[in-house]
Length: 222
Image (cartoon, rainbow, N blue to C red; front, top):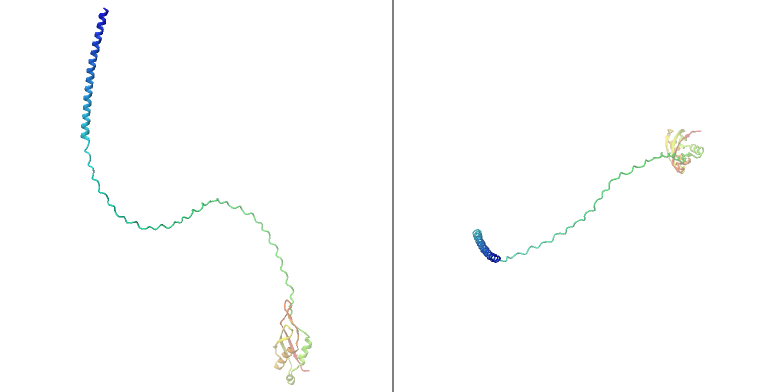
């Protein structure tokens, strides 16, 4: 009984394997056939779409003729630009805040010194001219009576003023009060110039200077 089971079991197993192989081959063939058909259809679709959608290639433009070299005139000479003197930038200005100066100290003004009185001027040495030996020369003038006046018996008083030089001598004479007789008037001035003598006048410093003197000459007959 075990033999029969063993033989049947091998035959069934073989049949089963063969059946499975056949079914598998048929399925594989079908799958392969379907796949091949799908691939073909896809290739046709893609090819058709590409052919319809792709535009024709554009024509290549003709090559341009070679450019002829043109004669180029040389550029005109250009003078170099004048040198530009660039002054250096001034140094920056530093601003210092202004500090107010300190208040000046109070000034004490001393009272003015008393003014010394001016020195008194030196005593003046000035003096007028004065007659020297008045009685003597006045008598001589009176005694020198003019001859014409004696003959005509003319008397009178003659007032004269004389100018006196630094040497004390008479340098000029003038009649300031006439006697009424020209003879007596002239005799009085001549006598003063001839006989009169004076102490010279002095200035403030005591130096001799000019002066004047006035007097009256009297003519009387004895």
